[in-house]
Length: 206
Image (cartoon, rainbow, N blue to C red; front, top):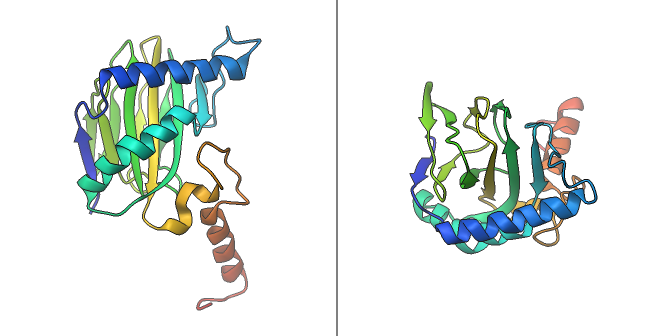
């Protein structure tokens, strides 16, 4: 059964203002001296500024959001990683599922100047969600397909926070929160590599 929850006003408007400012300070610092061009997209949303484990979102995920997700799902959870994205006019979020380190995913709207629906494929049906600032959607990120159509506003800032059910996968293997991703640390990547090696050598019961 899929977990899917909508939490209205989960993060206060004041908190959203603070973390939005913190994220934009990070963005401009990363892009300096070319910070007038706000674009540094990733392989999912090209017309965006996207950043892995921004400090303010790591703290939000740990100190506020995790308790909410555990209460809604009934599971003991561990922080995996957070991700921030400012999406700009015309940006498209293609249909996708999140990677293995996303037993539970949270999409929180931090700031926007235009409603940008988020779509999910739930039990064969398409579900449209229209968030207001501070609203969160909790879902099984590595199972449930989700996407957005082209953005018609100027900028939308979202915080994405991910959780796993076993401590071995905490922080995606990073020594500390806020550190960059390294696939050599990631137990999800290591497990996938082991499975491929076993399959290649016909090992079914290691």
